[in-house]
Length: 355
Image (cartoon, rainbow, N blue to C red):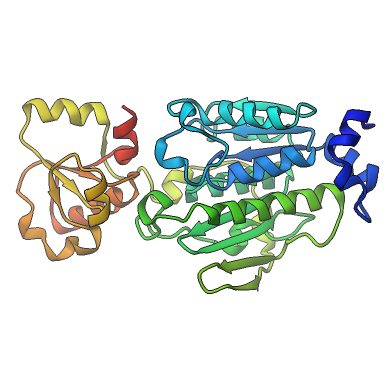
């Protein structure tokens, strides 16, 4: 795909780079990259892939922009609050680079659409923040023989790797089993400094560019771990387990990751219940989260739950947290203790605020 004169001007600083030139730029123009999740990782990855001249970008995200996103999801402004992330991102990217095509998917990736969407792209950037979607992305990429760039953050530590590249290790080779529900906090639960997902997302974009152009060494078979607080980084070798290449169909990833195995109530159901029924609303978040946003009820952090069973009334219980992960864990704990009518608020307070 030959470059126009306008494109040559736009990419001039790349074109003069030794070892790059028109051939590499044309490879970027011909490439098709899918970014799953237009959040903290997806935003910087999308910005730099678009600016670099990746010809076709796909963005899949069913969420809307919230004010709490803006300190790290730098594609968005206050004017975008309440609007779909994928649509807003596409407008910003094409304003920066009118020579690219952007396809928007205003939905979450799931078993019903993963194979159909991913098959149209050369590689995938994983910008998600939950384990069941990561396993879905991995398995779909194995089935379709597509590489994907993994990135993850936890407070001040981040990880980057490339999976399923040229018959290399898969995500399941690094993480054969998911962690127990509630044991790994998301950014909305643990917090994050906005610059950090920008760093990891930019690393992801660079790995994608290396795969497309053939430049440098792709981070396949190793995991880069970065700690920004300590200014340290190291790599871990990832060995291929050939059995992880034998996936031929998608499975139930929420069940595999322990999500959705607990009884849930929707936001609407809980709000109706507040008007007429006697029940206990149990908030298992941390104190700083409750201080920032509180819908009432009994407050016992998940880490202290086993020490305070005696504070919980013997009646129907609806457990809430920020996203529904810790509340699901709390439901399992309470059921093991003998509580019977216990439910998790589906989607947590994120869903509550959007209702």
